[in-house]
Image (tube, rainbow over all chains, first blue to last red; front, side, top):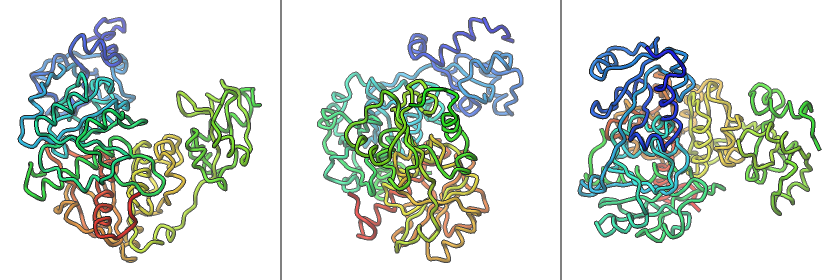
Length: 266
Length: 266
């Protein structure tokens, strides 16, 4: 059992929670909580830590037998946890390295292209929603918040383990590449002339979503095939970024379900 | 200028940010930031505080002339602010007291019924999305987070000033009342047999959305006319509550726009 606060492994775990640079150097991230532990692919789990008083049920016990684990004193576990009320289990997990082709494997892919999203909760929610709506991948601009930030991981509710993604060197070049590959790129923008419900998303489609405060950069909007607007009544000036993504993805999902194109919802 | 940290008004402002009970007793809440100040109805603003170094532009200056204001030392302003980087302006605003009838004024109202929503960001986002989608009101169960919590207020992005709402003594009774009034009540629930895209929302419609972790109570589901499911692919078990609300409200908005029923998006 790890008991001393000066234990170098404790210090390292705290750093892994706090610093994207350290996570990148070690090529890992921290996934915390029972659900995340259970959903993490066995092949990706590098280390598991449980608190002294952790009781996780049969499924956990079974998986812990395969992974092995280290017990940490309760008060120390609080230090390495990113939450106020830790569930008492976390795992150090290998980062994912998807290649662009992996996001384009399916015939008519449905993609999210995110520019400079800053709120961890928003980014995580977009992963969760994208998986639910049947999307095939998420491509992020380099200035988007680190996907391995513990708050992002938590709000993905496990989708981080299943939704392919990568950071694009240049999101506009990626958009151009997608267009050449037959994927239509749509920019969600207040200046759009057409409503998002007036386009058909039955073939490959990618939605560009911009930063929470400023929306998409003008040059990114120009990189799209078409500019779409989500109609807003009242005096609302914009929607939350994760809400915009949800409305667009579920409209695509609705159209695809109606025509029998794309996977069926469970 | 207010300079002493012991100033009783400073103490009171801190309490107004922190305690629902104090807000209720005084029948006010704190709305912070330039945007909130500009969008707050003049008739509702009771007091305005600006930091020593606040520079707000012409619109602010103009409105400040009508409201009057008190200057607060910069370091003290940080204390009364609920954000890490305060914009330097906040106003104490009267609470709203809508009556049920006010939410049912329009012919085919579109409503949200929220049960035990706990995340302030989710609740605020639902206000913002509801206004954008053309909803007529939000009815909350008594155990929903306080709508005047500063984090809720901030995430409404001003919709708090425009979207009618109230806390129901008993949400199930309210659902029954709505049904008697000709509003169809739909429960968003994983157990629903029909997809949400298979119902028509052209007449009065109310969407029941449940708590983030547990969804709707079974007895609340039974209070609905119909149980609807938002299809989910992959291994996603549920959607974020604000995302569910957005998907449902924008489907209603899409249908209404298509048939020319309800208001047009701007």
